[in-house]
Length: 307
Image 1 (cartoon, helix red, strand yellow):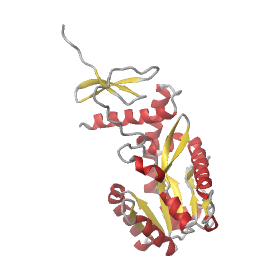
Image 2 (cartoon, rainbow, N blue to C red):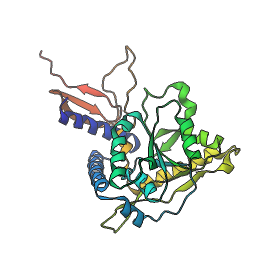
Image 3 (cartoon, one colour):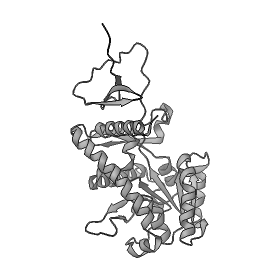
Image 4 (cartoon, rainbow, N blue to C red):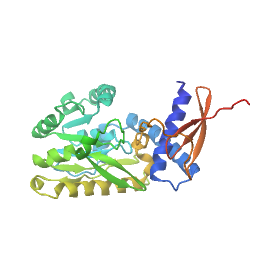
């Protein structure tokens, strides 16, 4: 597939994902949002190259926090979060999916070497490791901060019916998504403190536009036997997420991942265009013309039949 075609397909899926949550936005608003989203990504990459640990240490206003597990989101220049924690003197354990681990682990080690930091200060765990929850508990026992990014991927291929109890539905705008809550359950079971933070935009500052927000407690060891602790924790997380998105909804990276997978259409079900009030975007792919339905993520090939 040509690079331009991949970018077009990525843009369409992004627009469709956002449209699920903001159906009242016009196509022009969605297009502008996508351009801001791309601009943010380029801006954040530049920040990663320019900002070092000494700057973060001088600019950080974070007070010490008691958290064995620190939850956050793929929002703003989120790759600065491990650096903030290192600059504050914490030993950090970073939970990553397998593909991200393979892609970024070496980069993190290069950054540690460049700043003269012992490699043991930052370690990465594979989120798909069957023993990962046990390893998280061991990391907390060693007085490390375990940094976990909450994803909101609605992949139908990933979530089977029997996995329902491992995730919680989060209503947002005109739609919803899910968070996996296994890590909250294990934290409550073993009395591990949990907090949440994210990157926050700083106004009127030409040098540093984003900064780590003071972590907020989600669970404490006292919640170990509290029957309503998990529901209260989810409420805190949802409130923090809502406030984060209200700051700048285009700075959340996961818009490109939501509802990426389509259910399989059963045999005999019509694939004709029957959507009411939807938006259709024309595009080309592999020299063929299509209409893309933002609402259903349906692709409709345009063909001309000779009579």
